[in-house]
Length: 322
Length: 268
Image (tube, rainbow over all chains, first blue to last red; front, side, top):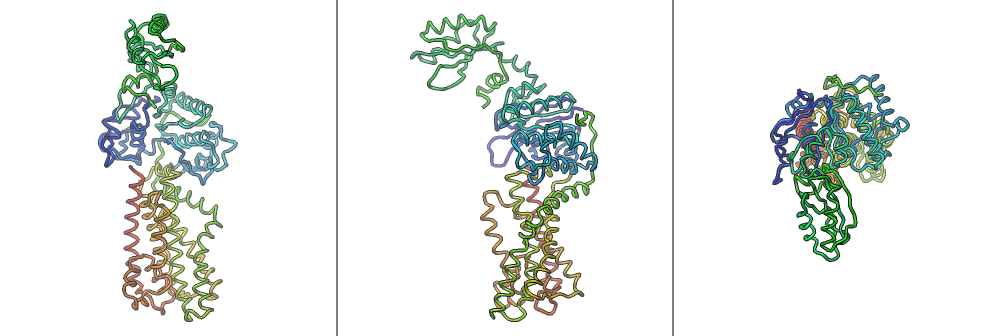
C-alpha cells in the first residue's frame, strides 16, 4: 500500500463560506518526494495538517502507512515526522535536547537517542552549536534542527511545510541538499511550497493546488508540457505612447504565437509580455521584433524560456503564484 | 552518515512511557531554573504573611491568634496559585506564540493525556511551593500551627489542592486568546486571591452572608478550609468532608473543562 493515501478530503472551518480543502485526492509512492504547490491559502498546510493529525477533516479519508489518521491518530503519529512552516522548537532547550526529548516522546532508548542525535547534528552541520539554546539560532539553523528532530524517530513519511520560506539563499540551498540526501536514501516526503523552483528541483510529482482543490497532478515535466506552446518568449517593449492592449493584440495575431500574457502590470517602464509559441522560440524572434517596430514600439528586452510550473499555474488559474 | 533507513521500523512506546518523557521535559526546565521558580513562588506569600501576620499584629491591628488562622490560608493560596500559574500563562504562549507544545502534540499519545500532563506537572510545582511555605512561615511568624495526628488530612488537601490549581490553570490557559492574556489574568487572578478564604476562615463570614456565598464559588476556599482543618482543628473551619467533597467536584469539573479546551486548541 502507498505510504500516503488521501481520498476526497474536505475541511470546512466554521463560519467560512468556502472549504479550506475541497475534495483533495492523491497518493504518494514509497521513496517519492511529493510536492503540493500553490499560493498561500490554497489549502496545502491544511491538507498536511489533516495527515499529521492536527486538523480534523470534515469528510474524506487520509491514510499514512496504512493507518487512518482520524481513527487512529496515535498510531499515525508513530509513523510521521513533521517539519512545520514556523519554528516550533523548544526554546527552553538546546538543539541536542530538542532532539533527545523528541526521541524520548517516541519511546527510543536513551543510548539510541544520544547516538542518533550526535549523528544527525553532525550531518546537519550543527555539531559545534548543539548545546546552545535554540533561542539564539538563525532561521536557517532552526530549520535544520527541526528537520533533524523530525528524523530522530525514523519516520515512515516526512512532512515538510514550506521548508525554505524566509531563508536566505545559502540556507535554502543547504536545506535542499539535505532533502536530496534523504531522497537518495529513500525517505518518503511530502513538501508544500509556493516556490516553483523548489517544487521542480526536489519533487518527483507535484500537485498544483488552488482554493482547496488540486488542479493538476503529475511530474514537473509532464505538467509544463500541458502549457500551450512548448516554449516562451519574454519581451520588454518601450511602447512610445502606443496603446498597450494594441501590442498584445498584434502579437497574439503573429502566426505561431498561441497566447500572450502581461508579466508585470507596472504602469511605467517597459511593457513586459510573455508569448507562448508553438514552434521553436528562436525562430519567432524576427517576426515578433518586426511587428513591434511596425507598430511603433522598440524591443528593449528579450528572453527565451521554457514554460515553468509558474506558467502552469498561470495557465490553470489565470493568476500568478504570489 | 546518520542512520536514517528506508525500511519502516515503528516504535510502540506505552502511553506511560510517553507521558513520563513529557513530564520529564517540564521538570528538567523547571529545575534548571529552580532559584527563579522559588522566587516566583515565595515572594507573594512571604509578603502577605509578613504584613498581615506580623506587621499588623505588632501594630495591634489584628487580634492574637490571627497569624495562625492566616497561615493555612496562605499555604492553600500558594498551592493553588502556583499550580494555576504553572499552566495558564505558559500554555497561552505555547499555543499562540512559540508553538513549542506542537512537538509534544505529535507524540504518540492521546492529546487529552498531554493536557493531563500539564495538570500533573503543575501539581508537582504546587506541592513543592506548599512545602516551602512551612519554613517560610516559621521564619516570618516565629511559630506555625501543626497537628501531626492530622497529617493525612494535610497530605490529602495538598494533593487535591495542587491538582485543582493545575486544572484551573489548564482551563484558564486554553480559554484565553493570546491578545487577551493581560486582561484575563488581571480579571481572574485578583478576585480568586481575595475570595478564597485565605485571609479569613469561612465560618466567620456568617456575619457577611452574601460574601460567604461568593467564596463558595472559588475552589481555593476548600483548599484553605481543608488545610485549616488539618493544621488548626480547633479553630473555625468548614467541615472537613464537605471541603474535600466540594474540592473534588471542582477538580473533576475544571479537569474536564480544561482537557476539553486543550483538545480544542490542539486539534483544528
